[in-house]
Every structure is written in structure tokens, then in C-alpha cells.
Length: 186
Image: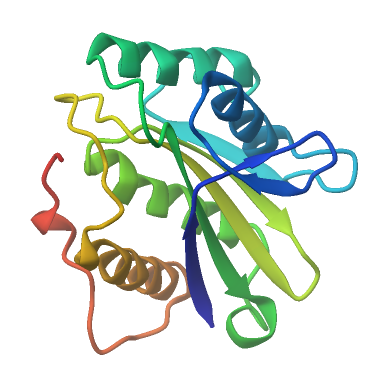
């Protein structure tokens, strides 16, 4: 089973989440948590799309998000979007190598990036499942358009995209596939 949970939160120093995501510190904390985790849990794999800085520099990635937002004068409202892709090990990975989840994480990040938004991601092993956290800039690096979560089709597209990516990586077949050629910048 694959589920997607979209949220707007910040990860605090204790590893709990608090709903906000409206200031620069929220951006810094969530990017750091996505790429580095905390004392209780660390990602087994991390990556990013659309940044000059590497995953080893979460502060630099956060600075780039803040810079894009200031460049387009979009520094109010939701500043960063959180997305968790949860993949059940029991249902999807009985014979599949755990390394393939990193390929899934990377290919799903292509969907976000090709939609015009920078993203950093971390893969966390939660025992029964993998959780892939995505920290997504809410302002497009392409044209400054702001992401709005009230678009009703977005979550359905993301779910179909995730199912298509998992099917491709694991060699499974699905009836309905996401059309990556339909992607346009925001």
C-alpha cells in the first residue's frame, strides 16, 4: 500500500511536528529534519532536486528556498510544503531490495521538480514501512508561481504518480498510469 500525506508543519528539536510553516526558521528546521533526521531517527537515504547546494548542506538548501521566495516577493503565507510518501514493506517489498526505495524517492522527486518546484527528500525506515519526507519550496523556481494546496487535483495526481513510480521500480503492473508527459511548470 502507498499513501501520501500532504501537510504544512515544522519539525522541532524534539522530533515532534508543530503546524505552522510560515517563517524562515520553519523552513530551516524542516529541511534539516528531512535531510538529517533527529536523535531518534535518521534517513537511510537523502537527495534533492533543483538546488546548487548538496544534501550535506541543509542550511544552504534552506537559504536557496528563502532566496527564491524573496526573489519573487512571495514571503508570506505557507513557505514550505511537507509531503510524506508511505510505502508498506509487507505489501510491496517482500522480494524487492530495500535500495529500490531510494530509486522510488528520486523518481517521485522528478514529478515535483518537473512541476517547477525545488525539493529535498529523506527516506526513513520505520520498521513496517518506509516514509519518504519531501520538503518542497512553495514558490516555483521557474516563474515565481506560488503553490496552493486548494487545487483539488494535486493529491490525486501525486497518488497516481507514486503508484506509477512504485510499479515501474518494482516491476509490477497497474491499470492506470500517470502521464509524465503531461507535466507543465506551475
